Amino acid sequence: MRYRWQTGAMAWLIHRLTGAAVGLYVLLHILGQFDMKYGGGLQGLRNFLTENVVVVLLLAFLIFHTLNGVRGLIVDFGQGALYHKKLFWVLMGIGVVLYGATLMAL
Amino acid sequence: MAYQTSNHAGAFNWLFQRISGILIAVILVIHLGAVHFGFSLVDLGSPSWKVFHLAFVILLLYHILNGFWLMVEDYVKCSWLRVSLFGVMWVAGLSFFILGLVTLVPFGT
Image 1 (cartoon, rainbow over the protein chains, first blue to last red):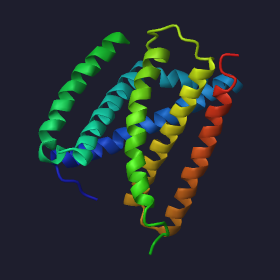
Image 2 (image 1 turned 90 degrees about the vertical axis):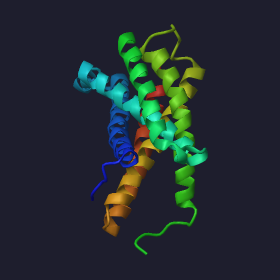
Image 3 (image 1 turned 120 degrees about the vertical axis):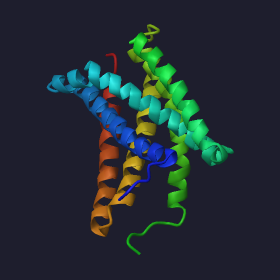
Image 4 (image 1 turned 120 degrees about the horizontal axis):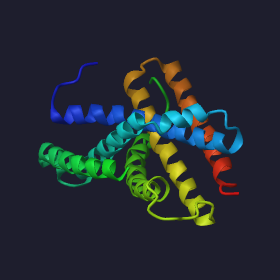
């Protein structure tokens, strides 16, 4: 499968990749919390999920996925199709600010 | 036809992926603030927080597994594999729901 190097297609592909990664994280997070209650053998998993690199990546993926999701809603339910590229970069700008603020609050 | 489904199944998935996404975004901010960034000293073992997190788990599992299913529909052409993976999604969804449920019900005790 080939993707064209355009804003919408790239946003779609990154949405997919970040969604898969964050989704996997959430499943492991649920598993880790279950284990904390009932076993405790998966301490290594919980350590991995709270490692700085992982958390910093997770927050970046989450913020992208959420804001690009907002763009999708505006395209699907509003007039976003007319200005979706500009909208993408405006939301990414908001995302960078949000990301900076979140990292400082960590 | 490679697989059988009702005519409206895709439309429901399409709409509910968006509805669950909106709800998740709202709940996520509260979850991160209350649990991970420690803005408040809330009691996560209280009934209302348990219901809150159970709703979060259900919405997340739907959104995640439906997302995975969309990828299967795009990339997996082989029909028996598609059917098998559809089953995997359901088993995973129910399993993780049970994991979440038995973790949340006695939470804080």
